[in-house]
Length: 123
Image (cartoon, rainbow, N blue to C red):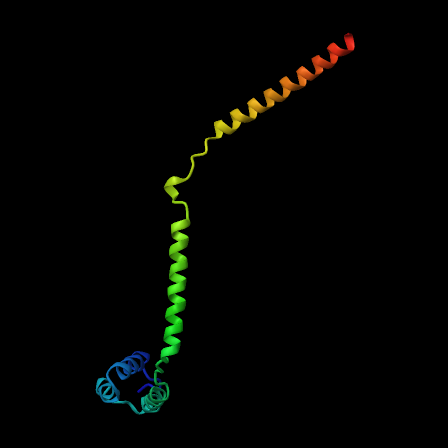
């Protein structure tokens, strides 16, 4: 027989021990092999030592307050965000047209200033 306990049996034993208790766990893995006995005893000792601790009422109240504040902030953030359907459509030809119009106005203004200076010098 193998000297290594089966991981599946150990996992099953631990799970049944946690949910059903030691007696039910022993029945599930019966017969307990001699090489598994020490490990099952260790699992039982850990199960006894590692009892779940219930948080006190003050901790629960603080945790609830923090969670409620966080949920409210998240809800406010979602309400303030601009939905994706309302995004403005950006058309590249509008920007290009504005750039061409601005360049034309600048050239026209420069030409007018040049003609005005040329007219003043001639007079």
